Amino acid sequence: MKVKTVLHVLSVLMLIISLFIFLSALVALYYREFSSVFAFLKTLLIVVPLSLLVYFMTWKSKNGVLGTREGFLLVSSSWITASLAGALPFTFDHEIPGYTDAFFETMSGFTTTGASILTDIEGLSHGMLFWRSMTHWLGGMGIVVLTVALLPLLGIGGTQLLRAEAPGPSLDKITPKITQNAKILWLIYVGFTFVEIVLLMFGGMSLFDASTHTFGTMATGGFSTRAASVGAFDSAFIHIVITVFMVLAGMNFNLYYKILSGNFRGFFRDTEMKVYISIFLVVTLLISINLLGTYGSFGKSLQYAGFQAASILTTTGYATADYSLWPAFSQNALFFLMFVGGCSGSTGGGLKVIRIVTLFKLAIHEMKQMIYPSGVFRLRMNGIVMKKDIVYPIAGFFFLYFLLLLAVTLSVSSGGYSIITSFSTALATLGNIGPGFGKIGPAFNYSFFPGYIKWILSVAMMLGRLEIYTVLILITPKFWRP
Picture 1 (cartoon, one colour):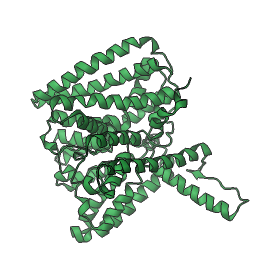
Picture 2: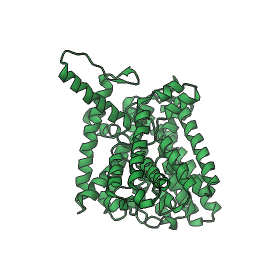
Picture 3: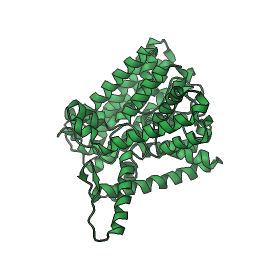
Picture 4: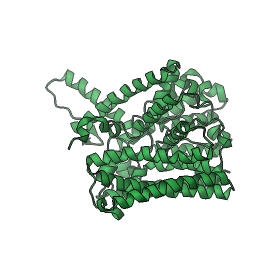
């Protein structure tokens, strides 16, 4: 285990995050929020010297190559370290009471979950709100992917690192070089971010609100600057823009490169994308019809149904209405979407559409095999035969996902909460969704949970964001053996 190489890259990662903390300090300075400025500077005085110390102490290991084990260790430690450091500004500024709550909020940000303990969001300073949303944006495409894009400057190979962090069961290479791949993904991510900010400003949002809500949209995170979330902006245009970009963020970013390179056939033949869009359109239509009695017109119903369906499907967690007051059918339809999630290679969380499609094909395959025992059938995705080394990990992921879902549900229920609140909380954190049902509905938050449950939920959020295997593999004895 090349621990020094891991620490070297980790120090670079923390220096990168420090730049964004400094940017947040500048935002606070612009709004003359001096207490927040001092909180950010205190954090930098701790994080930067420590990071530089580790950086120079491990300088001789900078030419090391990250193997599989180092990749898994670095990714998990990156999210933990980033959250530990990222919680400091909230603590120093006393805008979040206690380090436990600050850590929960920060982990929720970096994992793009959007679960919040804040009861007075508007009471936070602009600088802290900006940093809160920035954690979304950094965690969305992956703070580790950003580091991979810079690894050539360090002389460190990053193939295993990107493999460990990549959301979804697989990440197709766009270019032969993994660092070039990471750069392209980030350029697409930044491009979408810029376009959405411009559109939201055109719709009447300030630059600050447009930026923070775009960070939450593109990262499928859901942190808003308002307690009423996006519903605070009574604008159909803003709702539609955010709906469209939530759907775009929930798609595989590799498909956008195919479009840019002129491979339109590869884009439209993608099975996962077609199933993802179909689920969104069908559920939106059904909820819209069901909400006719609530909103009076189909257009209004479509606006609210489409937004909320996109928000839950992509695990963003924004809200324009309190869907807990909607008819039972609409609530159940949204509850169904909590089990789906976005596409592989997207910023969305959840089970991922490709896993559901794969297991559905596997079930059909097994039924065919029972009818024709001597027949030879093959699972195909996008015309390509799926090998066992892809299908088996997906089946194992499903088992672990629901096992952890049960474990987190039982842990939450130990606090005396109902099965609806407990199960919904487990699903919303493990699936990186944020809001759920019961006491964590869109009109509530996570502040009422005791400290020990918040730490458990923080772990659940990280497990969900890093696809379970990346974290659990660290606790296996074989992982640490030479």
